[in-house]
Length: 68
Ligand code: SF4
Image 1 (cartoon, rainbow, N blue to C red):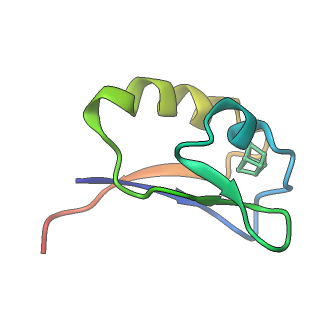
Image 2 (cartoon, rainbow, N blue to C red):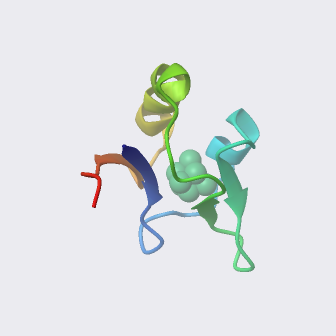
């Protein structure tokens, strides 16, 4: 299962990811982006990879996480 992560120390809260996809991203109390949904559905992966590329500071990553 692949997991969506946002590096809180890198995100500048520009809002791009949230405006592009509010199913996977939302703002925390500090106005930074956090994953609203961590598990990446295969059908959404291409779109999410585009958002990863669009983040101006490269704060978003999709990590492959082995099932425990
Ligand atoms: S696009 Fe990047 S910098 Fe902008 S809110 Fe999303 S994670 Fe943060």
